[in-house]
Length: 155
Image 1 (cartoon, rainbow, N blue to C red):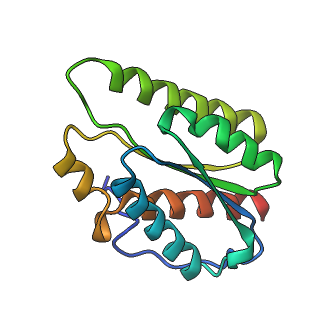
Image 2 (image 1 turned 135 degrees about the vertical axis):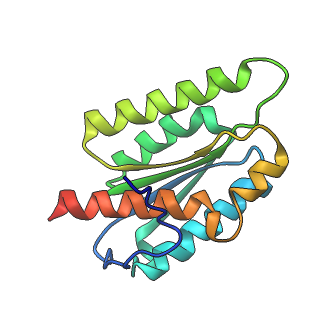
């Protein structure tokens, strides 16, 4: 089975009727800011109007599930969660990334609202930069996955 890379080439859909929430971590903002820019560009390509996009900034990735829940309460049809948890000398990164993944998964399953998982967990800053720049930008992948799921659910 061949792995599909969304950021390389995928047909752009019409998501113009969707309300989109973006929860973005301010921690490692040079990385998450680049992911946010890529997400916004992807939303433009998918015809999401600027007025239909609600961005909520939070201190760190740990706060992404709560921010995503708030965006859903504000009637978002789809949420994109963007964060970066870089490995350190302790297991702190594992606890944070696991908690975020579980929180977002539980929220998605209980609300039925798709959440694009754009939380990267690199080993170092160089890997973080590689995953937040150009065509390998995980902000693109998370946005496309979320939009595709929202369009499947809405139709």
